[in-house]
Length: 349
Ligand code: 1HN
Image: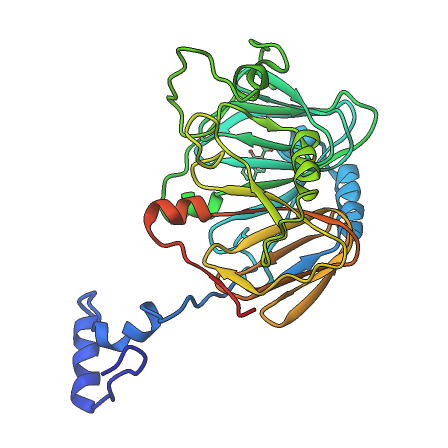
């Protein structure tokens, strides 16, 4: 017996398996190599969704159903290896949401954590626990577990963002709860900008004691994150695998912004080819600026602004930027780190 080889079957053994199977038992040595693999084995595949056709389909969906009737008018990005399961990776969900001018996506709450990454349009709002934030291109917005949230578009343009949720994780634990709001739109109990002023200025209210798992900041504006990358790029301290990569942080504890999902923003200078990198957190990338290509497990995907691509767990990733490029990304890294599963590896120079 080894880790990867199964013992040979004999008629006596097969008869024994049949007998115990009828009693809801199974012999570990017949499945060991399938369930304890020496390296991650995933049905998740590398894939890229170009934005242009997604935008057309979303606008078409906008003529078929309202945001209110749909609850959320979203096209799910399904990993080609996980069709029919509403997943972009084994543990995470991704979808593109459209809110048209004048529309409201009604208030509700659920156990799943959500992030929004704004891709198109400007000026729609998300309200979280009574505070509205106006959203612009590249903003990273979070909805903590069990937080009331609704969206509305009072601008004159369609608003499209990427939703990232930990839906498959919640399903895995059989821990999904959801509740509709009493009204479509939450009453505004705090002025816009309140949480960013309290928690987003590298300061905290003097007697603040964190009681939630998620960050008290719920909009990380692109303007600020991009400005940090812009200032840092002058140092020319490129990480060979990541270029210049920052993570979105919970100011209350220095951890990630959400309990189950990690998010990042990185800059690749013009002409950079990154050294191969792999980690156990399958990762969803969105390009916000620039053009390039990424090779994942030997498959190369060209991308430009607003394109979305996914890298499965433990597959080698190499980026190449034709012009200066910025990538947003999210994964379940924080969850894996808390549970002791996370690993990474850098390729040879
Ligand atoms: C949800 O609440 C939103 O609030 C978006 O915008 C997508 C997908 C599944 C379940 C809940 C939102 C969602 C979702």
